[in-house]
Amino acid sequence: MTPERSPSINFQYINDPEGFRRACGEILREPYLGFDTETTEIDPYHGNLRLIQLSTGRTTYVFDLLKFTDLKSDPVLEPLKEILGNEKIVKIAHNAKFDLKWVKHHLGCEVRGIFDTFLASLLIAAGDSDRRHSLADVAHFFTGVELDKSEQVSDWSAAELTPSQLEYAARDAQIMPALREQMAERLKNDRLEEAAEIEFQCLMPIAQLELNGIFLDRERWIEQAERARREEEAIAEQLQEMLSAGVAQTSLFGRAEINLDSQQQVADALRNLGIPVPESTRAWELQPLADSYPEIAKLLQYRAARKSHTSFGENWLEFIEPATGRIHADFRQIGAPTGRISCSNPNLQQIPAEDAYRKCFRAPEGRRLVIADYSQIELRILAEFSEDENFIKAFESGADFHRMAAAQVFNVAPESVTQDQRTFAKRLNFGIVYGVGASRFGSMTGLSRSEAENMMRQYFATFRRLDAYLRESGQRVINERMARTASGRLLRLRFDESNREAVAAARRYGVNMMIQGTSADILKRALRFLYDNLADSSAKIVNTVHDEIIVECDTADAEEVAKKVENAMRDAGALYLMKTPLLVEARISKEWSKE
DNA sequence: GTGAAGGGCCAC
DNA sequence: AAACGTGGCCCTTCAC
Image (cartoon, rainbow, N blue to C red; front, side, top):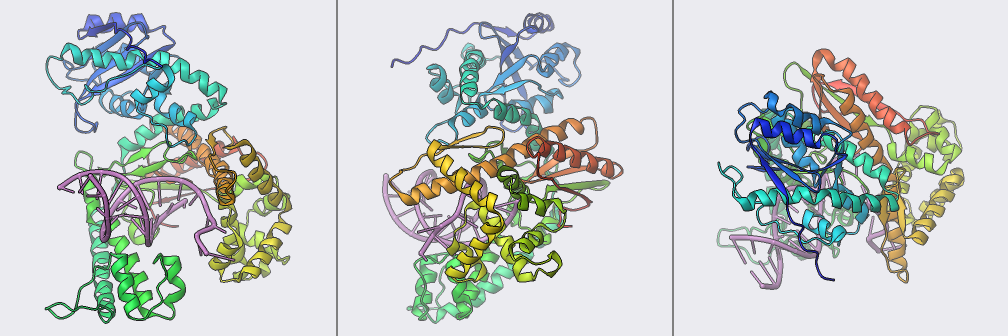
């Protein structure tokens, strides 16, 4: 197929008050507008917002903001802000989070009514990792148009922009309305409209979350990092000592140093000591040997200490933005094919659960954190989907779920459930969401294969509907080669049906996606509800971790904010859980800690 | 030097 | 026997 020629570009460059007034008047009645911005930096806390482009698809208006000294309150910009904030005028952007952050931070206004072609592309790709999602890729895929992005990195701070720069700026906005038409059609055909609505509604909350950032207590962090460094050093010294006996060649300076981070060298040294080291030296392989060999125990200790020290050390201080004194991480709204959000630079979703680390994230003076999470959200979704009365009953009592489940499985009164029984039930409760097998369950709990099988049989005999549901949905995702969440979010499964392992993996993947993805649907709905409820208050969303939302607010508002957070999360859950009770636990704290 | 791949491990 | 799902980060190893 021959590539479509780039469409001719018809744009108006607007840089005076009269032009702003006239242009905004002309587009005020448009249902859809292509929307793009050009900025002098990537980070809104550093550069300037130079251009805003709005396009009907026929005409593109390139608004130059260079001459404005006060973007937040200059009345000339009011009509433009009204268009951006008008939900009835859909702004079509690619990776709108970027533009939203700039507009919010520099113009001080919200963007309402968004169609994001980047998120739409991810939804339509439905987990196909071969598909690319740059604007050029998406435009080509859906409309056949070839785009050239060479001006993207050009200098947008020049007093006089070149014709080629302006043309580039206009072109990206101009293609958006036609692109949206194609993508909207596809979203409809794939029954992804509700999922898209969730994503588009979640853009502003995520943009604001990134702008807000989270406060990290520098001194506490340094102290903890130093503690971790010393601990690692001490353990490394001991491990080095233990392994030196297994090193063939000693250096001139006495003891031979081996690189403890090289699993190759470490495995060799251990073997030289006569320790039967398995092929892989992953923790779960080594764990059984730890009791017999102190060197193995020490190695595992070292790895944990090493992880803490390297991943959560002083390098984090570089992430503190000087302009705000806070950490502004990157949240990828569709970070996983399941719909989960991911986070990087740094990843605020993998802070060790230990208080020593969590407590470094605290509210600044005069403020509090409201920390709210869904209790057992994935298991409740499973209960809802399966309609298993016994499973739902265990939630309805409101008591400890694992205990209630254990009481049913072992047929004893809840108060007579032993610690062991509860642990077995808990492990199984978590495992089934991922599709755990008897062997894995056995090794987790120390049961033999056949004991593990028996216990799983007993478990599924208690929760018969759940068992049937897992089988049926597993069969369905294989037959249909796709899985969907409650909102309709889609994952296409690709597997070789002659390969039993591949089929089993696809089955686990698909079933897990329905649950994990529904949890993501609910969380994203909650973020939007919360964002709306917190407007014009002292409260800011500062982090979210899959089933948890953290809000920072003035101390005096904390009680009220906690209620709002709880309500937003409950209302979001109620959209998808009708039969199963939902529990949101919110607490007020000076620090991000457990309880 | 740089980057990809693989191993390992943190979170939910 | 690792067949328990999703991510990101750090390190080593190895290819270019």
